[in-house]
Length: 408
Image (cartoon, rainbow, N blue to C red; front, side):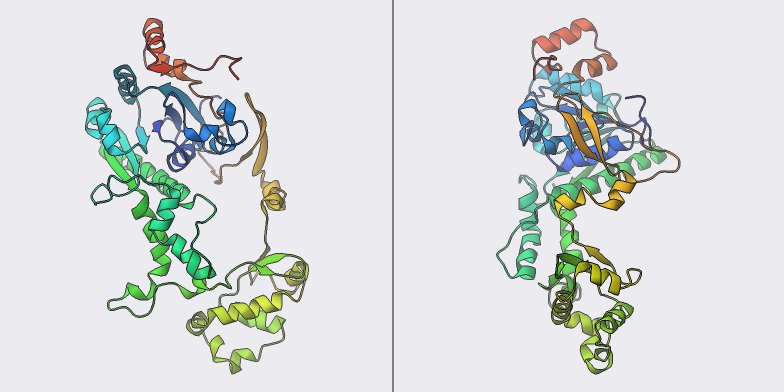
């Protein structure tokens, strides 16, 4: 890859994160031009081993979270490994970690130590829970945070079924996105003050507003004026509607949208005869029954018929995609969202685009997802280690070099 381009070009990130949350945040930084150095333990990030090509340490989950990064494998349980990390920190702008703070302290890599090495460093710690509270030492993962924030309970209440988790890592990826914004804001603050700082991004406290922002509802007021739960989101009938030949999303929300829909199905009289349609407040109070009406009507025609009948400029309507059909979406094809690239180890892969467009600092980066330790020696040389020092680090396995070409 040539010199990185994009709004974060020139920013160097030491990425001590694993699994989903942290790597998603640092990949966003790499996509926008940052030099992201993924610091891995000798065994590598655990997601390397999941799924096809896991034996090569390049499974699909890892491939989706670690492009535009370089990998150095360091054993931070050795004094020499810690010394290497401290040396790398001298020229870093950001250190991002989701290692528990107590463990970082035990390694001698707490913020106070790193700030002495580099006072301008942004030290971003992604944790399960705020370190101010009684849950501080608890481990956290996506399923646990979904349960802890009431999301699993909301799924049960809205579906009438047993509690369950959303089938995506919504907490990990949402907190990763927030961490990306927080880190970028900290870099801006440093540009104004000249000083680095320690920042903490807790999963629990980040996700509570995701859930309770919608569902605190009546309990927003003291004393409470109604129940928990935004009714429109909690109704079991808020779902893709079945048509004669598939499923469709059809969102009818505003006064105008309800007027158009009722005209289309020949029931305009309900606007004046049924008090449930009087205004948004009344509709919200009776939303389950009204969405059931929509469901019953949509089942009478095909998806294409509904698209022709309802003006798309006024009523959002979209056929429900499956994973398979999403890959064939005409809009994504036109924008080049899914692209085929060739990875030097696993061959042809499908990647997704960076979902933003820039008129000035255009990010045009493509560094293939690295094998474990692929860039170890290059990164050590950049940091000023000579050949003898590098040989010593490799010999005592404080640093793991790139695999040989026949290692796979």
